[in-house]
Image (tube, rainbow, N blue to C red; front, side, top):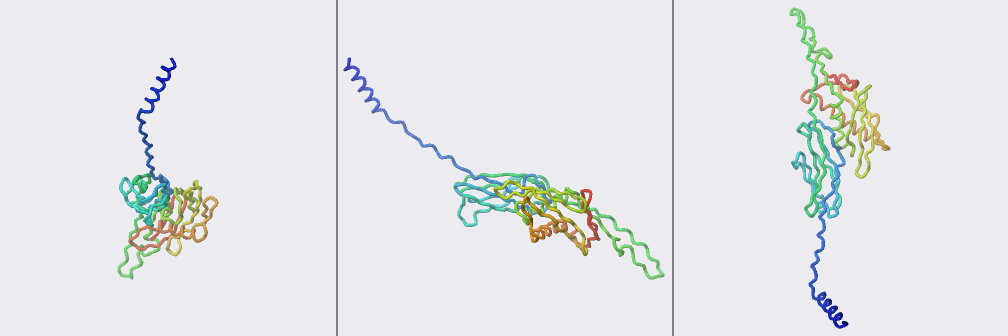
Length: 286
């Protein structure tokens, strides 16, 4: 009996030792893809036709970012590689696109790492039609009397050929968003304006990379001075941050130029007055 048990146990040990080992395949590492964050502008922002839209993004990948592409409606409008020529784990960039076609545009930032894997983020932006000036017809000159020296016609009298440009709150909002996007103040976007009591009040979002968005407030006055349009920034605070005088002046000049661009560009004119009231900006000029 003991011999049978010993024989059986020896046979089991022999079979176990002679059985082939199963092959072991190590798991294939999962390929990573870049992570992309668009810091500005915020999705849904509106711009005027012809505005230079600055898209700010941050791309990260442990394997190194090699290239960042900017696409609009599926078409690559800009492609940037790392300036040093070597990939890096994090890459921040501001890429500019000119908004030429009105409508809703889909903007995508696509990052490619060293292994060729891609990651992307997308936003939608609205491009508005440029505002059209409201022209008042000039009065007809009164006929002169032949025997006497001709009297000055009405066309030469002050204000005789005066014209009026009225911008709605939505149009001013688009103009100011385009001016802010020109880069005078980084990371400010999603501006909304209110036109009341002689002032333009702007509420905007200030969102530097890695920080939660902060609410900001900017107050402007628009006036006529020596036939020219003048914009003055009287208040500018972004959460706990306040713009200094130089930053206020630069922002005011940027918005001033954006408003001037709404006036006729092919003729010389003199701004007579500017009124900000009842959700409208009215400029009278001749």
